Image 1 (cartoon, rainbow, N blue to C red):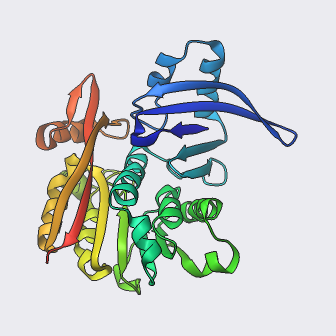
Image 2 (spheres, rainbow, N blue to C red; image 1 turned 30 degrees about the vertical axis):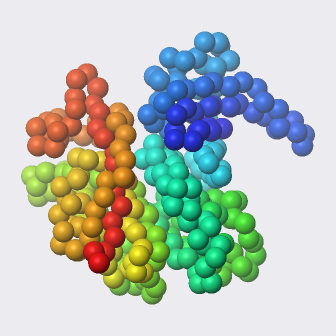
Length: 314
């Protein structure tokens, strides 16, 4: 299991084993300032025993990921949920901000407790369900959750993790949660939301790649969803509602342009410098990101992920 502390200051990898009905802890490894779910180079640099090295190898190759952060625990089974991300450092970063800013500083939980109406929450691209589970559990006592993902396995994973963390069950849970396996189609949504969350694909793709059909990974490449979501936000948000997106600053120009077209106020709430995975990039695409978008590259690539909060202008 990976446990991430508040503000993602450190992560603790814990090995355990079921012995009958007991859970027996085997070994543990603390990783300061994690910059990925589990970066093997970073993790192994802190491993000082054979047991810790074996623990890292098991976490990387084992059949399941069990991740705990703030009040939420999510499970991603690599066999049942094949192809489902996560949780990535981007999603964990956004989850931590939701708790530290909305639930604590802005006291959304206390406000929700006094509210007589439902608090409507939408997650677009729900993936493993960490954000949906967190919001449904702690945003307010009366949360109505809609979550959408193109991958049916991601929707299944989200459903299971929302149920694991929910404060309600049975018919009440079923009545308040609607999960959909489909592309994002704002016209098909029938209500407005107090909070919309998204960790969209955000690696910009040059026009030459788009035109020639160079393969891209749908979960990471392209900025089309950013634009579609931002431009649809005015119709989807309740008065006072917020769209909160975590994305790379490599795609900041697309986000700002879409927000301007939609007449949304944009605030960059916080950012974090993390390694950038270049494994899926061809050399021309990588060079374009360095020259045109400011990707840092000196033996290893880095970029800033940032959380943007958008609201309609008054």
